[in-house]
Amino acid sequence: METQMLRCLLKNLESEGHLRTVFEKVDKDFQLGAILKENNNKVPTIFKNVNHRNAVVGGLFGNRELFFSLLKFEHCERIKQISKAIINPKPYQVLENGPIYENIITNKIYLDDIIPFTKFHEKDSGPFITAGILVIKEPESGKYLTSIRRLQYNGGNCLSLLVASPRFNRILEKCNNNGQDLEVAIFLGYDAEAILASQINSNVYDVDKYTLDSALRGEPLKLVRCKTKDLLVPAYSEIVLEGRVPAGKFEYEGPFGELMGYYGERALHPIIEIDAVMHRNNPIYQVAFPCREEHLTNGLTREVELFSNLERIVNVKDVYITEGGGYRFNAVVSIENGEHGEGKTAILGTFGTFSDIKNVVIVDEDVNIFSSSDVEWAITTRSQAGKDFVIIENAKGSTLDPSHVYYKKSDKLGIDATIPDKKTELFNRAIIDKKYGGIE
Image (cartoon, rainbow, N blue to C red; front, side, top):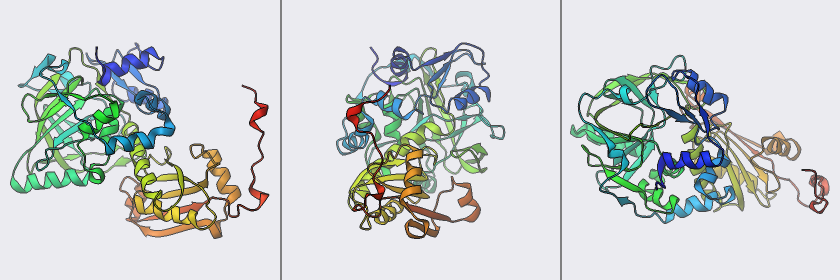
């Protein structure tokens, strides 16, 4: 019985009534993406009848609460559980065989025969793989690094690769300088543990992503060897592409509808030449509407880092990297006893953790940080702009923010929305005692 990767995930989603199945004919270009976007990428949906022989599934990891149910731990335990996996990685298991070996192609590779490549936005430069997990093995340490990278399909067996990781870029630069190709694999058809492990920052934690995956799932991740590359990939994934990043070869990539709903710029990027394809019988192609799913999980890992940094300087209760800020740019932080400068200290600590953070609100622990209306209420009733708003001009930002690209710098706003004086009753919330119950 399968306990890992996509087919196991879909079985669990279906049994719990969370999987939507679309039998009507859907065009894989634009229409499929429009359906996922209409549901805010929060409804797991499998498309059985697209204009390709293989089915497509998307919207798997956009719902925050559903995501934690897939991981089998409570939302309130997320920071503890993710931190535990980082501190205590577990070994993976290498199998001699696996379902991914059912079909192996090593010549005359035309990727669109197997993959129902999708286009999402009108000005996208072409179809993209949006949910592929890229695998490399670090040459010096032998550690496996995984990450989700956007991959433009260039025709035949060629993809373009956008790399934003400093660690990955250093490896690529070294290969280019030495005239060496870099071996890579891309796997599709994975589960919640695999995507979460891929988003944990290897620059910060320096850990093998496959061992993180094993720790998160509570059992060894089952892997098999690639057929043409010295790499391991999940045995129960749907599709695996084995390839090389050729030294010194680049092609134009983009524009592409990116994280915040704007087009990323066209530029020269490395390419991947695919030398082999492995896939299961009747493979299910996994997509994510750009770029919602990996950024939710990326935001979760950022919450772990932010909480860890803030607990050294204030009594932090919880943190939230918000959905509206792309799980990257905006944060809400709950602290205890914020009347003696802790609020502004938490603001500075947040900006010091991530250069991407553009806005942060600090609140007391009676405020629900996951409710935008409750946070707005705290800003309105517990802060004054002249006293509690902190503006830092001309700071470092992110190229995923078009205003940063335009101005070349980013201004930061921190709001201390904690109660300014705990001794006064002015800020006591009007409540109904829980003993009186309520109307369901």
